[in-house]
Amino acid sequence: MNELVISDRVLAWFAHHGRRGLPWQVLRTAYRVWVSEIMLQQTQVQTVLRYFPPFVERFPNVTALARADLDEVLRLWSGLGYYARARNLHRTARILVNEYDGNLPLDHERLQCLPGIGRSTAGAILALASDQRHPILDGNVKRVLCRHQAIEGWPGHARVTKHLWQLADEYTPHQHSVAEYTQGIMDLGSMVCTRVRPRCGACPLRADCRAHAQARVNDFPEARPRRGLPLRRTTFVVVRRPDGCVLLERRPTVGVWGGLWSFPECSSEKDAKDWCLRRFGQRPAVSLRLPLKRHRFSHFHLEISPIVLDIAAPQRCVMEVDSVLWYKGGESKIGGLPAPVAGLLNGLLPNS
Ligand code: SF4
Image 1 (cartoon, rainbow, N blue to C red):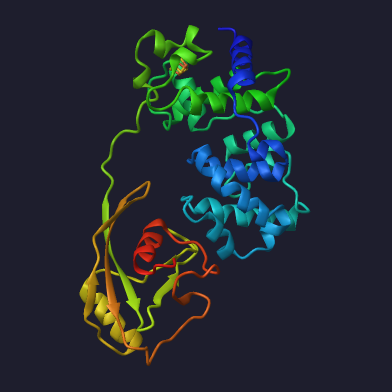
Image 2 (cartoon, protein in one colour):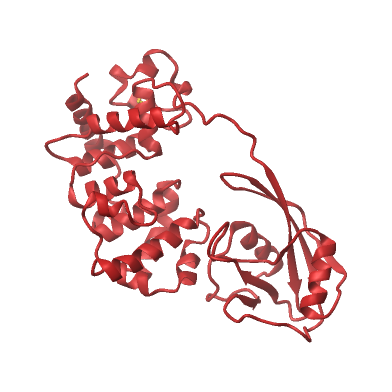
């Protein structure tokens, strides 16, 4: 196989059909490329286009991001999901200020040691922001390579991953246009070699694509070996005061929905009432049982039973000021909210 021919074909395709004029391409700095690459992990470009501009307007550089409260960062991330990305972005910004004068190190080894930046993201940042030659292997690129070479096995297996990195390295041009090629191969995966119904007729790699030649395009990449995701259950306790405010608590920064604002949780309705008695000195009746909600995490499903407990104005209520608040909706100051919490607030508080 002539690898230069592959990169040349990707470059020629990119020149006519690739994405151009994206906000992080127009004003291309290492900081903006980094933020965009983190947002684009597991998220489509169309979605990122809604989140990127307000994020970089509020945090135009590493220093501004490092100085911000995590709460505010999470608020601007709300709805984008995978909140560990936002927490790592914030942590990394602080490391950059403390150890690198507020700049991203343009060095692959150092870059991939920073929180949230793996080998592929480090390669993409360096290729796109400073035209350094590094292969990348995000989900889109894996799909193109697996199909082009008809690679058997789940890409998450170490043996397959190693093979894919070798191919990614071979395909990356040596002499020139690394930034264009990197953007081009990612675009090819997301625009042509799509997960469902790839447009092989428009693909520059079709002539020697093995999956296409074997009419097995849908067999690659192989799916992760199936293990049914476990189901966990929880009860969201929506404590409501007579003025309509509901109680929210900030979750610990480590773990699921770390640092986001959510409802208190109990294991059952009875526990919820006991908890209310301990916390507020009153045992309310359940005012409302809301429909069950299901939320899918990468490693489990969560089944949520939301109940609304109306309480009289609390006589006894120990508040840790930074991690508890009574929310009445329409307030811009609140931090990030997990999607099921935002959905419930929308239904309960018209101004949320
Ligand atoms: S020919 Fe089809 S399957 Fe092969 S790389 Fe192109 S779009 Fe993907």
